Image 1: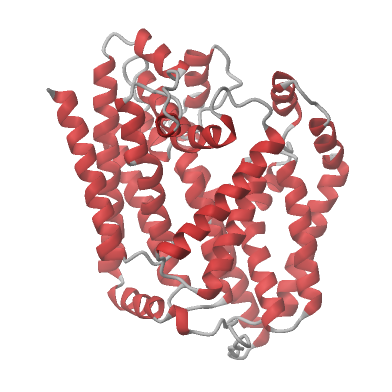
Image 2: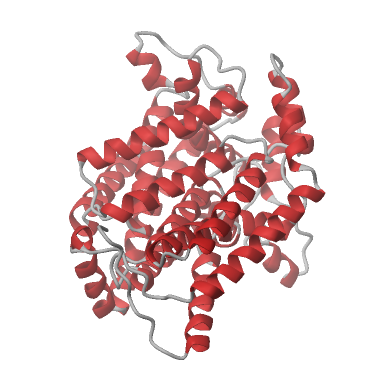
Length: 464
């Protein structure tokens, strides 16, 4: 009875979030709508279908092809190993429902704290499609300096660590998926933390900012430098030997390209953007994955995007608190240090429990870490904080309408929101750029205006 009720509560919360997205947020392409839309896309009906089908892999693809998929191995393992599997599912369903409630609450809190700015932002979004693209910051020379320095640093690290050689060696492994997986585990990704943060959190924003500013201001050296930065970033992201990092940089550029022309989504623009994203992801899968089980590249894409996140969430809830108690902050490194505890990342515990190794990582939704640390209170609190951050980004950077910086920030926000879907909140804030990118952009804008000592002029793009 309680299990059925939990599914009903989760479905009602999802429906309420969908209605809120359509009626209150009105499908404008903002950081807030990206957050709510992405959560509904991955942890809405897709989550329910995965759980209700007992973890059937690529169920939708299989049903459309008239067949039936096999059961997810990790779903079967957790179900068999858990004396009260229903209690785990009940906790997950209620946590998902509280997540959507917390997200809506976080948005509404920001709206009530700064109502005038929100009203101005909504007016700017309403007229977005008719506005010319403008650069309301200027400072192209300082932007050029920042982009050139970042490009040289990324290129220097890539050359020193021989990223091109790593990529070439990985692609040379053919007909051996296990060999590729082992090579990816041992050689993929730079050990340089600063490089990884700049690569993932800062560079995408500067690429969009530099390309659009160089184009509008006809400052071609900035355009060229930004193009070189894009190449350096693609090399660095490809060196992770994973399909996601380079593919999602391209998706961020698709988001920016869409915003140049329109903001509010309709069926045609939505389907066009979705088709472009699917093409990019399928191409990346073809390059990095050799085996797809029985459901092909498209089925693998569906499984990886819509079902693996639910699997990872199940791993977390299957471990905490039925096997391990809530950590009450010890899973957060700074809090563990303050409390004088040894910091042990929860994902290593989960990996060891369900996969028999500490090397595997569980790409779970941000509320997974919230649940591990603070139970339902953490789920609500972290959800409110994530939503409030996204809404604040919109209020700060979209209030002036269709600007170069606003579009660059939305591209960065897309990366941050994606990180939220597969990682902890603090990781999304820093490595995902959800908080780091807006802060650095604000600092750069302040520096530009202090150095110029004059109000920047808005230069409309011809034909924009």
